[in-house]
Image (cartoon, rainbow, N blue to C red; front, side, top):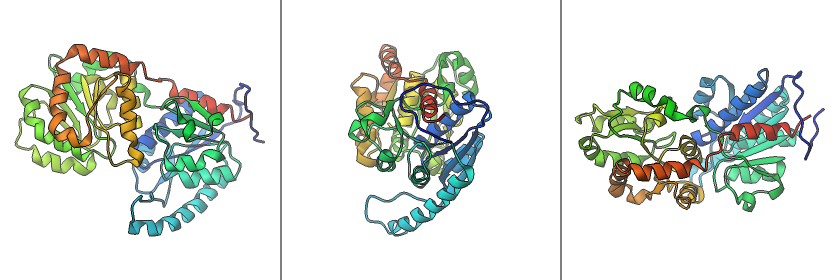
Amino acid sequence: MLCFQSNKEFHLKASQPYRLIISGGGTGGHVFPAIAIANAFRARYPDAEILFVGAQGKMEMIRVPEAGYKIVGLWISGIQRSLSLSNLSFLFKLVSSYWKARNIIRTFKPHVAVGTGGYASGPLMMAATRNNIPSILQEQNSYAGLTNKRLANKVQRICVAYPGMEKYFPKEKIRVTGNPVRSDIINLESKRQTALNYFGFRSSARTLLVLGGSGGARKINESLLSGLDQLIEANVQLIWQTGKVYYESVKAQIADKDLRSVRLYDFLKEMDLAYAAANVVVSRAGALSISELCLAKRPSVLVPSPNVAEDHQTKNAVALVKEDATVMITDDQAKEKLVSEAMRLLHDEKRCAELSEHIGRLSKPRAAEDIVSEIEKLLV
């Protein structure tokens, strides 16, 4: 029988295989923290059964099986914040997904449910809480997502990455754990030569890593296209993740360039090697990206996406700027300033060292383990 425990510390009974259900997706910012939590739970309980629930057709349906876990897809999509014909089908999809999620809960019988945000987690977490399954939310951003805000009163714990989240969630439920990210980006210096060899780069040249999030970033790609000749002339080694949507277009536009020091990817699986090779990183300011930069201790130029709820990426970036831990350029300034600012930082090793030290202070390398400890506190 499941019961709740509020304050006492204890360990789960190792004799019983525990069943963990995790839901969240749509973007890497929701998917990869979910996988990190699953990995940490399995490391502590190797015989645990872990099931993911995601949105049909989204990246989690590929990335989760790649990580070695089962996933079930729901027919669900996000609601558009502007008037859109796609919103007409949202209610029907929501009801359909909720009934499927309820059947998943009743069949799998999880001991605990974890939601990492995104529209895929809504129906599953609603079904879990209505069936009295102890539940935890994990919020990655400094601005709480719509799904997590609506579920906050129904769950027992809410693990967050930023202080001050009581303006969105009940204060007594909040635990500041940080964002769980891949553990292979710790102690990157030991991987640096391996990384340079992997990309075919020289240790004597400076390396720029450009990321646009799991879906790519149009303005960052456009800015790199405009300034690519400058980077090539300055002998900068470039690792460029364009995103799948932009890859073929970018590839065609640079076909006539000298690409001996350019490595172009639609999606980077070897992120630990990319970070290890990089002297400076250009990135959007999603919560997962920032958490990885903190753990990797990499100097960065952040270009917050303006196309997100409540401009939360700008809030994420500003939080780092206040700690002198990054350089921020707005999206509308990127085409004019991004490449020149990245090059200035690449060749200022003193400034790079300062940013590396300051951003490293903000890392929480045990975030996934701390979230698993919060899971443990819900069950006997």
